[in-house]
Length: 307
Figure 1 (cartoon, one colour):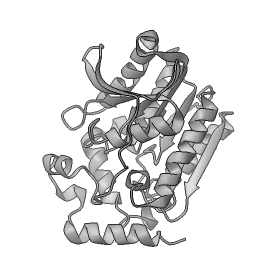
Figure 2: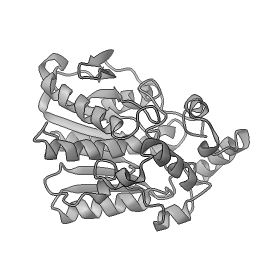
Figure 3: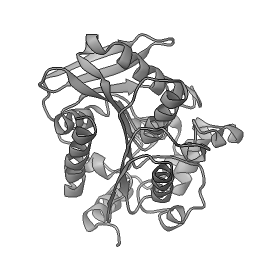
Figure 4: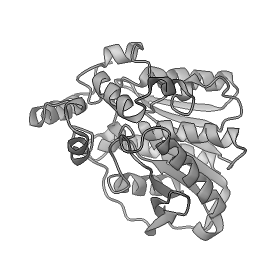
C-alpha cells in the first residue's frame, strides 16, 4: 500500500522546513538535527525510577536506567538508533520510558560510542559490554539475570542483533529475546526495498550509504557478521527475535531476509510489519496512531518472551 497519508504529510512539512538530506550535512549538523527531518516524538511518561549509571567497563560507558513499579524485573538493554553516528540516551528518554511501562521491564539505555570518532566495532563492543555488565550486576540493579532482552531501533537494532551473536559466540550472557525495530542488518543497497523507497520516505539510500561510510569506512569489514548480521554463516542458537518492520522503509527487505534465515535456523520469530509506515514511525507515536500501537505490540511481545 502507499505511504500512510499522515506520515506523508509529516514528511512533506519536514522537507519544506529543511530539504537537505543527512548526507549533505556535517556530522555536527546531523547531531544537532537529531538525524530525522521529522519533528515529532514519543509522549513523556512517568516511571517509578530513572537514574544515570556508569557501566564500569574499559572504556567506561554511560547509561540511563529506567524502572517501572515492581519487584525483581526483567531487563531490556536498549540501543538507540541514528546510523551509529547520531542519537543519544537523552534523545531516547521518552522512548525508554514508554518501553518500560509497556513491557514491564527495567530498561538500560546505553550511551555507546559514536562514529566517525569511534568507527566499527566500537559501538558493537560497547553494546555487548553493557549487556554483560548488566547481567553481572543484576542484583545491584534489582533485575533478573535470567530474563534479559536486547533491543534497539535502526542502527540500535543492528547492535541488538550483533550483541545476540556475540553472546552466543562468547558463551554468555544469556539473552532471552532480541527486539529488532527497523534494523540495519546488511550493507547491500540493491535490494528492492532500497530501490522502491530510495527517496521521499525520511531515511534514504544515500543517507544509509553516508552512515555506513562513517561507521565502517573500511568496506571489507562491512562483511563481518558483527557489522552485517545477515552475513553470519550460522544463526543457530540465537535468542527468539521480535521484528518491527515498516513497509515503506529501505531496510524492509533485509529485515525480512534475516527473519527468514532465523526461522530456517530454528530460531522462533515474531514478525510484525506495519503497512504504510516509514523507517522511524515508532518515534512519532505522539502524532501517528500506528506508532503508539506498535509500542503496545512490542510491550506485549516482550512480556510474553520474558515471562
